[in-house]
Image (cartoon, rainbow, N blue to C red; front, side):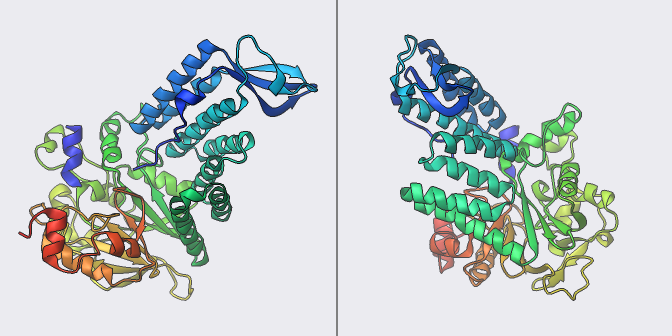
Length: 461
């Protein structure tokens, strides 16, 4: 049911892999830490190294399966298999003879630093950004000429919204690993967009289920059943705020309304409105369609939000009302604010005088659903819902979908400024892209319907 339900509606970078066979050796090494008159030498017996290899491989397997906390635990076990030994401060650690371990300092540093790097990215995946940063800092201490420590720290700083510092560490990583320029430059491009957001008086928070919201708890058994669907579907939700007033709107708040509200509260944000890009239950919540309705579950979404915040405007296109009401029969038209193509809206509660006010321009982009919309923020950021992802577009095989309308909608988006950052509704091939990238090698490239339809759907029907 899990896989089938998830596929009804709708990549991460793996941890660094060193050459395991080359590194798994017996060794002590100098950590650069002194305790009184002794150097601390990290050693590992031959038997312990067997465990290190086992824990590391298990951690990588868990990571690749999206079980990040368990992966971090395995990397921790691997590091715990090492032991510290004291040597005289005047002794060169590289000359120490240990009957239980060989002396391959370089391999020792590589292995332990790799475990730290892997644990750092695992911690980032579960939202423990400070822990991720600390592990990355230890990698830098141990291997100051290896780019990965700087890269991992930059990743953590980005999540901590310390963008200027994150950019500096990405640049340092680039100096050390120019062969990774394309990948690192792309991260820097995103950081520059975040810095630009700050200059506009704008903050955009991208919420990821399983990391920021939809966290399972023994107190929420029903939600524990529902939340994994959001992980499988790789939903991306957004909070858009005015950095001065801290007023914010939610975009496609779904799955875990309480968790979203708590996230906003922890960021000192005041929720004043919400937008829904389309009516599907993985974006707007509601009762699942048959045959899944037999489970008597309801996905958090628009209905719960409207009850929790009875006075805020909730924006959606009227062409999606029928579909919305089918899964949320309690919702009435007078509770919603219907948007129109080309309409420009300000942040609710805005006084209209501040030049930094956040503005939302509506693009009606039918195709995935009849009422699908994209939201252009301050002419710079485009929230695309299920209209456009990185390299692909939303499904057009639902009863109310229209493939030709999707092509026409994408053609409209093609006319936008190439530097606009696209923030999609799912992490399909990436958490962001740009108009330029999609014009160069995505669904905005093709110029005629027949070529486009055959390439992406295999049919012009």
